[in-house]
Image (tube, rainbow over all chains, first blue to last red; front, top):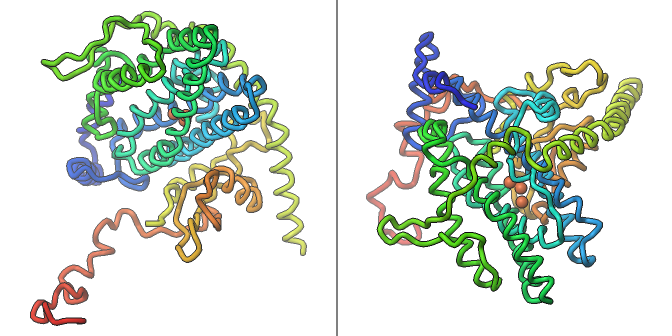
Length: 328
Length: 118
Ligand SMILES: [Fe+2]
Ligand SMILES: [Fe+2]
Ligand SMILES: [Fe+2]
């Protein structure tokens, strides 16, 4: 988490070079233009972005697990192909984001290490289990849906490589949300048991999806600094309210309900309101005590280790080929 | 512009593997910049970057990573270390010369405004 020192870094007074760099940086931010990798930037900005982008990358990679688990159990060949394409996309999102994070100076291997050793965090949503096929629907609709609301403004993030990666990601996300919605739509129009299964999935994913936007604004001191740096454009609560407004309308098309009877539009504030979320649960999951934290990490480490021979073979082959080329 | 995102950091990306346990660690794989031509007749445009052990793998990975939806008809991969960039510290100075040279643009010539086919 960012500390107060990050905030001070913004106005760090150092060498003449630093002062010129700071002035240039401030002007770029004031003009709402983009910072590029070779530009001078405050240490706090670099640190904040490295943490945010790499955590985002880790989330994409860990996020492959709940859905990958269902590829063999997809109810049709069409659904299997769609699910594989989605999971492959998430791997791609992880790679775009690792590339962007690396431009800030931390090598990729170090970023991988931070995930594998548990030093780095990833989105708490992926520590919830996917129990039924309907969960593939709820994940696509609510989890990817929340991600889209969060990510669209990030396309304008002040750090160039991050914004460009998000543009690519956002283009791909809308199919993720739609395929999820259609899974639920099909179940909702099926047998009573199928409809119940869809409702149950929504009931379980609703609150965790809302918590994806992060703590309430008064509990999120780093947000303000991120907004001053034009990394973040809207507060956690603003985005969450926007999302609630969207899904309360969409759920009607499904003929299902959201498990929250306090959702209402406040005419005075022009904002959507919803019931209190269980933030104790959020922090518990974040600290590693969610239902699937251990399993997700174990699976990730296993995959990394099991893939070692492939990486080694590719390196060995490349070395041999370049030796041959030198001899020839 | 098709400048590389990673050129500035290509040296740090090639630092030796952090873990001695993996003798051929992935961080020793060079960084490649990927350029995609979206359609016949258009230029290759910078799409992003990736790590790969050799050029062949770089092209294959670039296909999987950057053209999953018909985004391209042709790919270039270039070792990031082969890209030479203009000095980022030179800021404006390097590009300033066209300033005060408006006469290089058609817009500069006002008297002929309204003359047909000119
Ligand atoms: Fe994604
Ligand atoms: Fe995402
Ligand atoms: Fe997604």
